[in-house]
Each structure stands twice: as C-alpha cells, then as structure tokens.
Image (tube, rainbow, N blue to C red; front, side, top):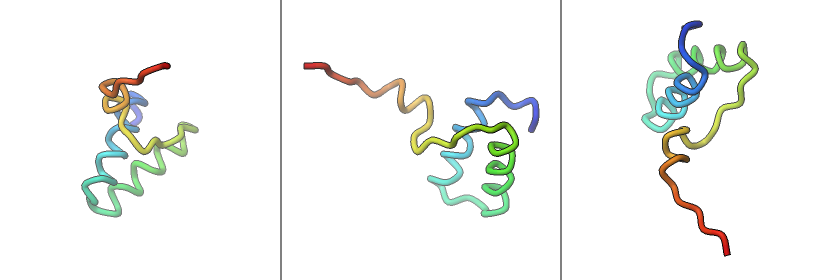
Length: 56
C-alpha cells in the first residue's frame, strides 16, 4: 500500500466508506492515511473536479 499515490488512497477510502465495505479494509486505509499524515475528505478528488462553482 505504500506505493499507492495519496490521492488514490484518499479516493479509495472515501469510496469504501460510501459503499460500506468491510470495516477491516476501511481501518487498513485509515491507518495508512494516518501514517502519511493525510486528511480524509468526504468527497473524492474526482468528484470535486467535476463540480462546477459559480462566482457572483
């Protein structure tokens, strides 16, 4: 798992939570996120890129 890019790790974690996958798998991802000092996001990076924002 140490070779997995940060963005893919965070996206995998987010998707695993959304799909309510095995708790042990989610914990494994959480431990790796903590080890790398990353912060999980509620949306995957790809979802954020596809959303449009408007400024008034």
